[in-house]
Image 1 (tube, protein in one colour):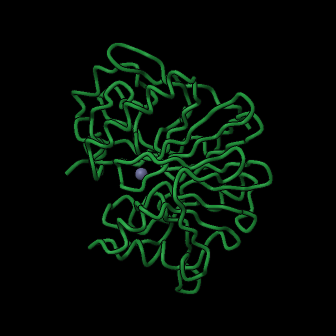
Image 2: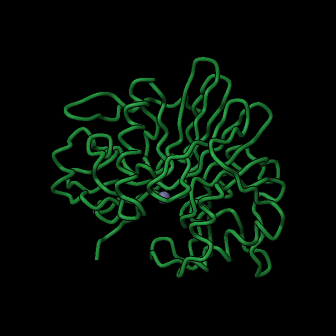
Length: 298
Ligand SMILES: [Zn+2]
């Protein structure tokens, strides 16, 4: 059994300005764990030699640090939430995610956002830690948290999961209530959300997995989704996500993206990278390394 410990709360909010687009991170939880829980080859003895990961992304024992957070993207007149974390009161197999009672929504509101003003919710894929706050429990029923939003999901992702065994709980508490409320929009990536924000296919972790590309003026950023889980995968792109459905596809997608992000100097915002969550991919040794960038503080 791999031990996972919840870390004391890191700073909850960070802000990045990408051209005209403002991106705010709202954290649900941060965990430190034997990395094999998430990345198969990330045993502490394999992580430890990557000393550049310390202290932010790994500790001196070689355990990896992961964050679960949402990004709020303000583009043109559109308020967008990217990935909705684990959520409260959900029955989940992973003990740290089971029946959570976090202050995520209070923190979201304290960051200056009104859930009812959200226009779009983007789910990069259909895993527990990306769809949780799609809904909240009100009077014993799961209802959309962002009641005036359209929720965007790749059609292929829906096709891959909706008849899969063992998945009914997530669908019934976090996906079907959105469909029943008429708020779900199945899309075919690449899909333009605004003139500055685009969903692009980055398959491998799941069949219909997407990342979020942001381009405004000369500035470029990307929200990774789970094609990478920790910056160690910049140096070790062949290490396999434990939940990758098609590991070979995920590897080749990762290589392709890292090369592309490195060449274009893209600000990379990692969906599970703890603080500092944003940075640039630079060439190092045989592969790459992650060079953290300071956010624009609120
Ligand atoms: Zn995830």
